[in-house]
Image (cartoon, rainbow, N blue to C red):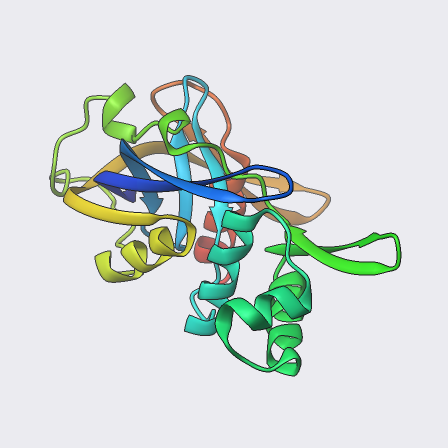
Length: 219
């Protein structure tokens, strides 16, 4: 089976906050190749072992939550009051946004002294540390002929929106690539399962296995 990914050529603006007492922000432009899972709206990175999941973002996330998440990644930690100030909104709305991100696993609550702060719930590498699929593997553009394909379920615009939740991204080009997996049905304890084996590396991809189990076994 061939699984779809969007491979993007990007210019990424990285905001770095420096200083302890007097904070100062610096912006650097980094060229990067970023890959998005075209089925579930997830940032992934090509590695020698297989394609690795970095961040899965639910498509139903609101624009306000997306903006709050981006600020959280930039600032590293936020209080309800500081987010309210940055968004020019009420503390009640800021609290709701942070609690929503926490419920989705995108933020976590920590207590510093008597103060409640929120930190990113995920660790996202610097874009220069991520590898697009086309950087490691030579895959042809377009649909492989005569093969079983899993069609994309998210659009390029959805994928771009997800990337812009993380960084200030300018896309220069993209390609839809289909990555090969060997799919095996398993039977254990009376239950069916799916194992997706990376056809290029021979390694099992647990995340794709779980996703395809939902797609193949329950649809």
